[in-house]
Length: 397
Image (cartoon, rainbow, N blue to C red; front, side, top):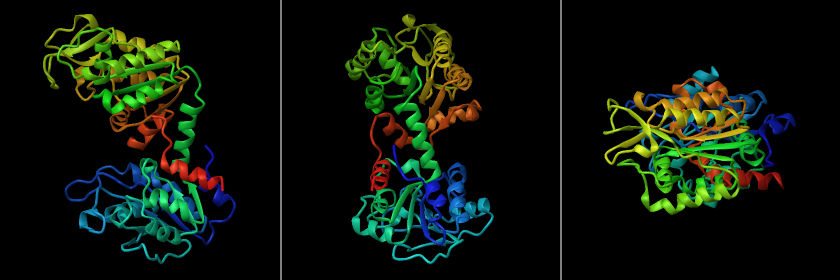
């Protein structure tokens, strides 16, 4: 995937004295009092900003926060808490600018944070008149917000169409490299773990991966549906009986390529969905009518761990059981540890997956942790993300 990178723009000397507009992802969680409760995204945006400042550029940064109504700014929509935290991380004041679409006053070596971009009328639908105004603000547009790369909005797509130069920031460039390594040119065997409550929400991903991966490990409610499709009883476990034909088609597509969807041979069950429910390990053939399957069993987990340790590339999206409950976390824990120990290049994404990675402390052993939930899933589906598409077009001239 050929895109212009911000590092190349800086290396050419072009950014010095120029107006650089960075679209970051600063959409951080806040408590009811407006305090930031987790600042990973702000910290992740700092390298790109420091690159621009060090190059002597006049730096503008913007992001969305929450789900504001266009044209109706409310105090809770403000990036003020973000400006404060960003200032602490950069060791300098970061002024916050409102009503900035028609012009921004910023000098080389300075930085300003432009108020919540989703308040601007026309942002979500990528209105051309807004896109042209945004592009007029800068000499260089830098997209560094992978979490928004699947959306064609004013600050993610439109500005890239019209800005004199449009390029990928270091975060976005790293995502592109990791995605290419894992999916475009993977070292084999390529193993994908796709887990979650519903097949329907990830059916297109399963279908796309079935054409490419060597092993497709399913977990959670998705695994229950695949167990049902394989003729096993699942009691009162979460599943989608209406999608059995789709599950069978995925199994058949994998089999036709000499690949497989490993079906659990043992499971961990309970009678109720609760943290204090009694956990019972049993063979997958022995599930009772009133059982809930809440995790894969230890034999299945050990077998999958061996496959992961022998993999060349691993793509991970979703825990394989209810890992939030101690009695039902073993499957996810064993898989996380196997990924950590594997020599494979691994890429992981999705909120629950990141929570599992944090819980088991394997951040440094995962090859690449993707920050974009929806964008990551669309990449797995085989879709070309709008942000990648426009940056490729601009790079091609």
